[in-house]
Image (cartoon, rainbow, N blue to C red; front, side):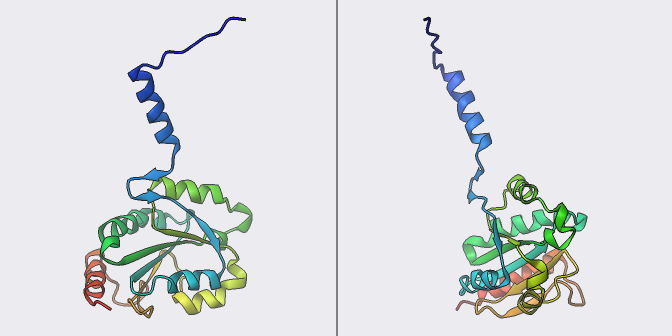
Length: 181
């Protein structure tokens, strides 16, 4: 029996490292993780952020305005996380046609955008609609965001009038971050 050996050259090693790196979901700031949650679990996750300012973004892969605005959440996370902002992505894909729901599509979406913040998917939207409305406000018109102060009190919702520009929202976040606990 003849044995074939491959010689590990620097170029071959570099190619292997690149291929392994491309298959990995690691990003410079961490790993992309996604968890399906019920309303009670989401509420606990938000309470676990006590002492931080929390921005929740409700979105869906089937919502073009959500897809378009999602990179701004990722940018906010990168810009403010070390200053005390916890960005939370809440996918509501199951509010559409539940038969069309594909968790892998959501995971791929988040990985492609390097969304290393807290990422959740509403697991049982019909059963949890009322407690989610109480927790977040009227998130039925997505994209929808809710902002919580360091004490966990909801202080802003994206459907408030007048609507905030991106710059105004960033300023509001900065003001909340400046208010130390």
